[in-house]
Image (cartoon, rainbow, N blue to C red; front, side):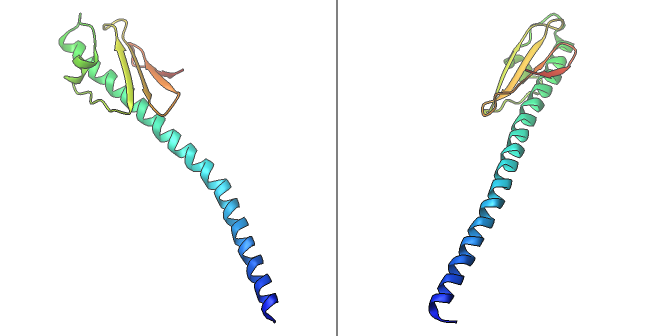
Length: 118
């Protein structure tokens, strides 16, 4: 084989390699994004659940009290800078909403501890 044939074969192999990498990236990148989004949403849901558990501990000591972020922090809830949490209400009308700053999904917890999404 002469030098031109070698160069052509080398270029063709390089183009095939680039095409294969492109196909792999087209499959892998969306899967990674989905995985990351599920992890982000799982974290927000976990914070909603933890806030509910801490609010129940607060209500055991203060049955007529109103839950606030400061109050439930004293009963075990640990906030995160990536989670936006709002809490309002008392034992019978508790409302907790938790969402991750990198997600459009938010989770709501009602007074019975049932978690739903918007």
